[in-house]
Image (cartoon, rainbow, N blue to C red; front, side, top):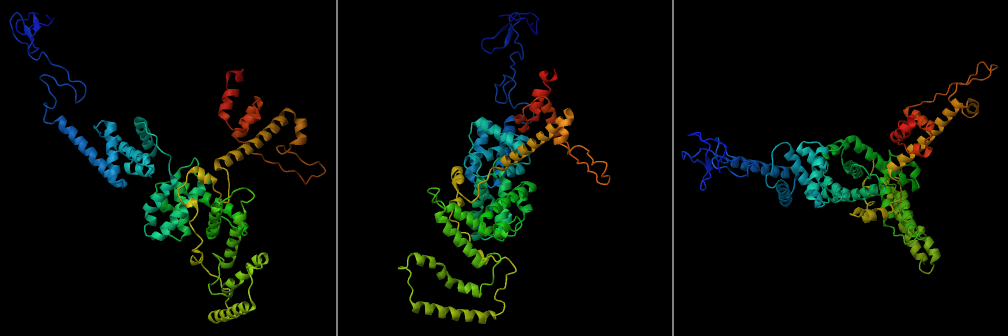
Length: 530
């Protein structure tokens, strides 16, 4: 088959392809045309090679060497990054496999690759129900949290994963073990703090403090509180910096925790004196009360408080006898004699069961004589003067047995189990309370706006019912006494409410607060303009 091209030798257009080599040959002079079968290289570095121009044969470099170097540098970066995150060898291998699977073993270079590796590490740990804070990964990568979050979303969508919910308890356990602020604390104290912290975290979940909020500030607030409760020198600034969270948010969550504990303390006999400032001193009694409430098994409503009343009486009696936080010296007449008077406190049982509680006169004489001997011994040791000497500082030894750790809330529970527990306080979510308060404020603004509209449209009716916004004076006879002007602040929300009322918008719709939608629907629409 002849082509339209001309021969390079004789200029005749009689070129036909050779069956063996595929080169073009002139039928007139028989000259083979040079470089006539060149094929363009398309399809990437692994595409088909040409006949005369092949991959890696031009210049001093090699494409194969470039690819090998790129893979080597990428794998080295992944190993270094896994070491900084503190992941084990098996988890590091899973991250490498995920990166290799998504990139088809091509890996990559550039600013996007570290973000991609961090997202893969987060997904692998999250799938295995392990805690790896996204803020910590973003800090190591050197990117924004939202950028890393978008990359995590892309990885999850590409692999079609379903990640489990965020476990705030695992986050608390990991934080208390890895934070440098608790590095010098003994293992026994850390174990106790871990149980107390898990208990408080579950209580905050039940009180909806964690609902719709970032979990790590809540973890930081609980860490600081249990640290102060166990007399560990810890600061909110250090914990917030170690957990890579905002200090202002941590302090806000810490304040919410204190406010919830104050609300729980209201049921105690001295609860009216408990405030946010002194809740730390009363926290042992409050948490003990919450723990006992959570362990009470309620079969029905009538019998729900029967097993608990005895525990409350014992708790109150123990607090009044030992005076935890404001107690007396350990060697006092009252403390030494309390064991003997415990028999008198149980005398109510003797009245109910006289046959089981019969004490002879000899036993009573022996008990009384032993009591007099010990009282004289205590007076000799103390000197008989400062019998009721108060402690100046908070004595931790006097309340070391307040925490039992036997409640189920000190262990990992499901959400339904947490909500079924009773800890002495049932509250609504803070967002719900704020919404109700905002709705009440809007309702009051609507009433005030209606009165202002009525005062303008019908002043003879409005003057009798609404005079706060008017400049009214006393009669001329009372020249010295004049009624002062009552200043009413009107902001942009009041003006919007007035506009919506003038356009006959229902009050129920205005109370919801969706002003932009209502303005677009009733004021700026074609129907509203007409």
